[in-house]
Image (tube, rainbow, N blue to C red):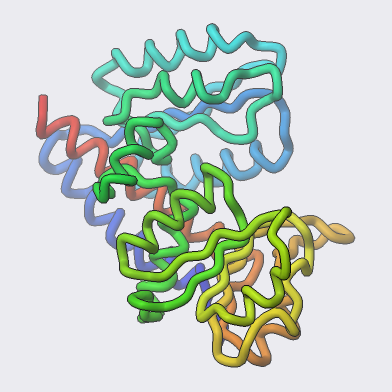
Length: 281
């Protein structure tokens, strides 16, 4: 079965539309979102512009704040603090990756946790560890949304995550544990990876290597969530051998899979932040 992320994204979008309409009816204003883009990474710029365009279409006041790649960490923090103080701004996000000269941890720590639309602030990551899921990293939550939409049972299932980053692997492991899955995190130094993937009911792969996950590494009727995005001969592909794996397992396509849902998860969080801030004024 093909786990079409565009269908899942559409279902979230319908709910977001209703939320935005209700917010405007109640407060006579739009939810406001600002994302910070540092440098000139082409993929980040394309993703950011697409996200902003979609949000504006849904009735959200969304803009990109650009910084040159030579900007200092302190200058970005000053801008974030300015956005934190501005009561008209409901959500803030910093696009990744950041240039290596920028101290990412300090940037993420500067974001007001209440305005965090990507769940990456240390406070919100800590809250998620404690079981609170009010502000959750968007890509891991997109994985959960896909599994839930297609009614794929998570409870008691053996899940293998091939990624250990703060953006995907670690938070996703927590979300799955919160739903009673048995989770194994694998990475570049994992021994006998094939042995471990063959034991798994669900595999989430995010390694940034095209066709990394082979057909012989997955068992019949398993579920494969492909988070990877790679360019091969001017074509976007994932980390899994989609053509062959799709013959024996359920799998998300790339493009049209996790990425589509991630964008809508961020958008939904923007509106939720707006409601929460207005209600607690």
